[in-house]
Image (tube, rainbow, N blue to C red; front, side, top):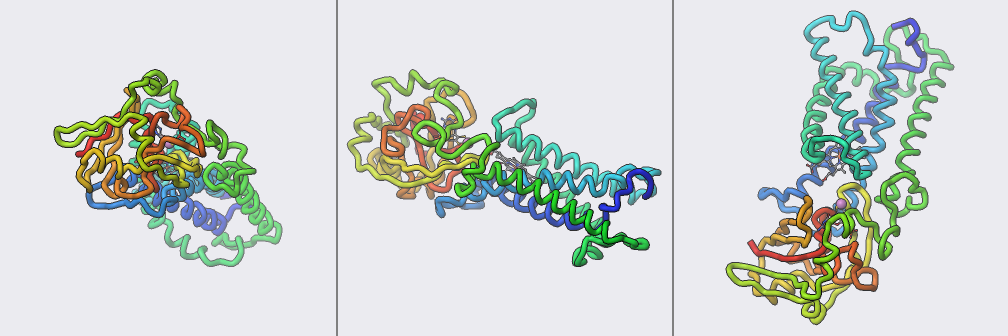
Length: 376
Ligand code: HEM
Ligand SMILES: Nc1nc2c(c(=O)[nH]1)N[C@H]1C(S)=C(S)[C@@H](COP(=O)(O)O)O[C@H]1N2
Ligand SMILES: [Mo]
């Protein structure tokens, strides 16, 4: 593989080392992605509990951060092998064709996956397909094609996994000191790129990096009452219905319906907890939420303990107008019908007159502008 593509910085060892880092980022992404999926689907065979309160915040912060880190790693790895993508003849045997097809699938799926993921976190949906479903199925495609890729490349991986330096061209290794330095240079450059994209975005999820958060879509402490928002009251079209004097929360089970006015809720015992909003898009923020325990409201309405709840918003359209809450979250004493945030009445942007805030719940399920709760 000589000619104009030959760069002495490329080596199998370099490709394997980059692949290890990329695989690590990918596996973190895959595991946390599936955890996010399960947190939202709450399948019957798996109970995801309400503790620790920060679990989803950490897993989804890791998801978006490791996903962002994987982008420069993938590009560096592609750079390290791209002369091989152009070899001639393009296909040498059936096995070779399969190998190339699996790599083509993996690389293109990866590029699509990280691109739509990143664009989604900026709340831009320029494509006609549903993000979540596409991202979910691409994850399986990636997992499958990665296993195939690793199986095919196992000999090279084994040979170069433990080498001490980055020098390793199998055929007649005449790597010089300067080759070694340029390979280290590639690693330093790649590490620098990873550090740069991670450090300037991860502050949206991890508070201690807040000062460096230049590029993430959300910043901590920026928003009404010092908390970011995703969907505004105007976009949700609830500014009228949420400020009607006759607003009430209606709780139903069996045939019975109980209506709680805002004054009724304010008259009940109030509790305050420091809990995070942890958006599926990676940003998160702790705040002091004050209100009535959801379990107290349910008890006052005569809802049997252990019921699953369907929680509805005043919002008439949109994905998040309705959520199901498993009994484990209803039972948690920190799960609130929140009326106040950081010491003052809930801003309309945060769900006035009342919203749900529960520990260890994906942000999308923390329903704002409550209208009704139905026990199923
Ligand atoms: C190879 C990399 C990746 C894999 C394998 C992966 C996998 C997943 C999976 C399985 C889910 C759950 C989908 C569901 O709930 O059905 C998910 C969710 C998500 N991922 Fe990724 N992801 C990757 C990269 C990224 C990147 C780079 C970003 C953004 C920078 C990103 C942003 C998101 C977001 C915002 C969600 C939440 C979607 C929602 O619930 O609405 N992902 N990911
Ligand atoms: N009714 C309703 N509730 C909602 C949403 C919504 O669009 N409609 N967005 C959710 C999302 S995606 C997040 S991250 C949180 C954000 O909460 P905040 O605006 O109070 O910060 O609210 C959730 N509750
Ligand atoms: Mo969100």
